[in-house]
Image (tube, rainbow, N blue to C red):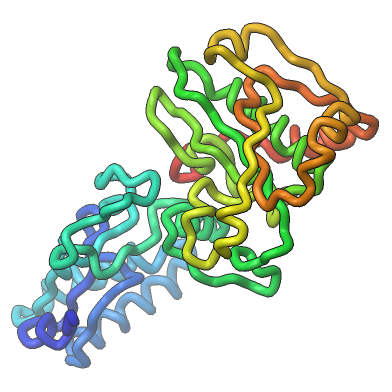
Length: 306
């Protein structure tokens, strides 16, 4: 087990390195006069300038104490064991969980879920990477009665597929609405590589309407999901597509009754996989209201949710 005491034998402060500055969210501190002075200065700075964030204040305070105290010692925590969100997720090329993450002797000890804006986006990313265990009162993972809907996004042959995949996502939520099933997201495609929901949509805006009505693409890999759910997958393709081009070139229009009749005998299936939904549009009685909800919820964004 890693021991912070070893970091502080020679140093007043050891902090996780965030790009090129010290991170204010994960710091080991020895109670010395110098380290106390750092936080006294930091407090003064934020009190004087309320818009100054804690991390900027901490680094300015560290620089000030360095100038005043020649024996003040500060260092970054081990960069292989303590990683920022940028270093672990982005620089590490981790958009999804990996079957074999790393050599156990060299695995990161701490990953700071920063470099992404908003609490809901942070939770979504942790869930996508199987780093979130909280089940909640709604049994987010462990429910044995909840029904799910999943679908696939075929590997594209052209780079510009995002709008087609967003249209398919709208169709999936329409079917989920009609069948009262929670949608398990597929993987999307961003410039010919697979990417998660937060790469294309603003998670907070999306959750305002659909929180609880969807699950991340890695959901069925989570250890808290019951085996009965994982084994209860039934594949029933809605439309047989030959290839991606043909699935987007011609729209397939279906009614709400078509969906109910098509899947009426699958109510017992824990997970219903309807195949590709590219080029499929569903029309039903209260469509105008539901389409309005979808339109309000699909706000485009980037990976960091800026």
